[in-house]
Amino acid sequence: MIDELLHFDEKVTRTGFSIRADNIFIENGEFKEPGLVENIAQTAAARAGYISQTSGEPVRLGYIGAIKNLSVNGFPKIKDEIITEITIENQIFDVSIISGKITCNGTVLAQCEMKIYIINQ
Image (cartoon, rainbow, N blue to C red; front, side, top):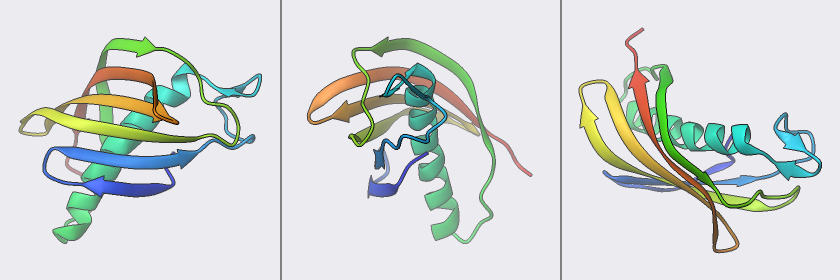
């Protein structure tokens, strides 16, 4: 649930996503909480996929293990573009602790911490 990878480095990954009317998480013209959380998770997945592809390894599956301190300050509307940034706070074996933040037009809409498990296939 992202359109493009905007930035990648060792600690930070940033993606862009345009909100479309046919998205499953649209309610009354707004992109709601489950979509915001999924977008943060998909940004983490894009990071993991990018690392796998650039190192010539198969892309592995990841799962959200926990969400902590979720704060939602607003919802993007249809046709808005959101920018999502994740920062790797800690990486232990196949578990990443990230902080995620979603902005739209410079306003922070949502943020949280997330624990993500990557599995070997």
